[in-house]
Image (tube, rainbow, N blue to C red; front, side):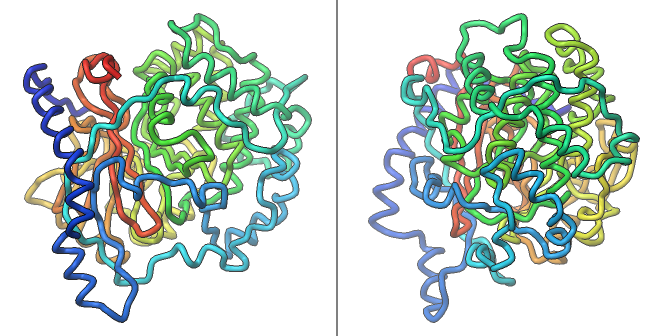
Length: 484
C-alpha cells in the first residue's frame, strides 16, 4: 500500500460517475440484443465444445456477479495428499463446528464439474461496471442465521501460543483446547455486526478477552487443517485490502451478500491504518469458523508482528483490548494460508510473484505457523508489485522484495497454465486495475483509503463460467453514497 494516487477534483469525479451510471443502465439491454463479437466468434469456432471460460467485466447487476445457488456447498478442492494428512482432524473440527463437512466430499470428485480443462483461456472485452446502489440498512439487518451450533466461551486458557510453541503442537491438541468453550459463534457475529452499525467507534471491544482468545484458537485450528495453497472452485467473490475500515467491510457484505449467500476469498491486509481493525479481523475469523469451506482469507503483508507494531494494530489492541491479546492475533497471522487457485485458472495472492517460485508445491510446502521472513518466497508473495519495467526483476521502492515485469507474468501464466493473476496490496483509483493486457488485476477494497484518497473499493466476482465482474463501493463521504 505504499503507492499513492492523485486525488480527482469533485467535479471531474461526479462527471465520471454520471457517465458510468449511464453506461451501466444501457449495457444490459445492449448485451441482450447482441452478444459481444468476441463471444460470438468463440461460439462459432467451437460448435462441438462447451463455451470456453473467458474474462469479461459486465455491469454489476449482471447475473454473473450474483452467487446464491451453490454457496452453501464446499468450494474447497482438497488434494489427496493433504486430505490424507488431515483425516484424523475431521472429528475434532466437527465437534468445534457441527456444520464442518467431515469426510470431505472431494473424495468422490464432487467438485470436478467446477474445474477448468487445461488450455481454456479468458476472452472478451472489458466494460466499465455500474456503480452499485447502496441499500438501506434494514434490507440486511438482522442477517439471516444459518443452521448450526452457536458459540459460547467460558474459562478459556489465556496463555499465549508463540510460533515456536505452536510448532510443537498438533492440530488435534489445539482443537482439544478450543472445544471446551466454543458454542456461540452466531452471538459473536451479531455483536460484531451491531458494532459495525453503531454511530461511533466504541472505546471497548464488544467481545471479552476470553471470547477473543477462543475465536483466535478456533480459527487457527481450521487454518492449519487447510492447505497453504487453497484450491477453490467457482463461484467466488474476491476481496482486496480492507485495512480496519470496518464500516466499509459491512458495506461490502451488503453489496456482495452476507455469508453464506456468497462464497468469499479475501486477499489479506485486514488490520492497520483503519480505526476498527479488531472488529474487522474478528468478524472475518467468525465467518471462517462458521463457514470453513466457503469463506477463505489469505495472509497479507500487514498480517505480521513487525508491521502491526508500526502501523496501528498493536496500538489499537493496547488501547481497546490488551497488549497480551495482540500476541493471540499474531499467532493467528502465522497460520493464515498464503495463496489460492480459483478453478485452476486464477492465481490469487496478496502481493505478487517471486523468483523463488518454481512449482506450486513450493507454496504448498510452506510450513505454518511461520513468521514472514525478510526475504524469499513467502516475503515476495506478500510484498512484491507488478511494474512496467524493462527488466524481469528489480528492487522494490518499498524497500522490501521486488517489482516484476510483464515478461515474468507471461512466463508464469504459461508455465502453470493459468489465465490471470489476481492480487491486492496497492491503492487503485477505481477499486480495480488491469495490467499487462488483462493478465493481472489489482483489487483494492477499502474506499476513501485512510480518509485521504478518493478511491473506490471493489469486489471481483467470478462466476461458475469464469466470467469476472466488478462491484464497486463508493467512498462513504461521496455525494453518491450519501444520496443512497
